[in-house]
Length: 139
Ligand code: UDP
Ligand code: MG
Image (cartoon, rainbow, N blue to C red; front, side, top):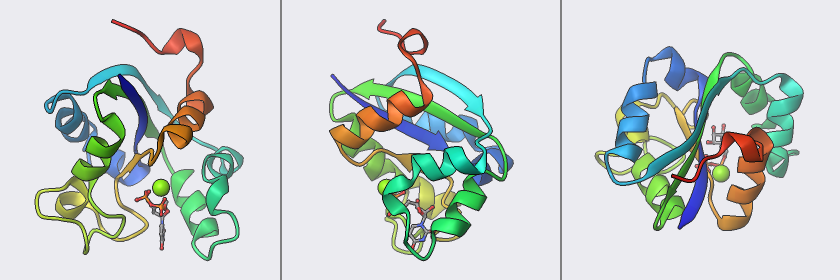
């Protein structure tokens, strides 16, 4: 069973898309095994996106991610990482496939409503960034 970390980003929360996004994941067979609302400070957003430090969009991205509350969740299921990425669609909503969450709801390449881990190693780092052992459940 694979695990991944997903985030309903501040724009998704503002657009009342928490339920829509969870429904897409849960309704397609992934299990929610950890869930909470958080509001990241700038430093926390910078730590989460440390891999993107130095890129031209880093300042704007971390400002956006700390601009309001997010919903963070741990999802479990066969192929959880690739399935979540497929349902999200490409980073740029203009390039995202028909029927994907980003194509359907995202405004632009930065404010793209949802995050999903891109590999097992990043999923492990990202899950542990927001959740401790007592906040993730096997059931
Ligand atoms: N991002 C951006 N401009 C870019 C590329 C990415 O603002 O040119 C933002 C966007 O919010 C994206 C996040 O940075 O979701 C992380 O980028 P990544 O390439 O990891 O995209 P993702 O894995 O989220 O599709
Ligand atoms: Mg990424």
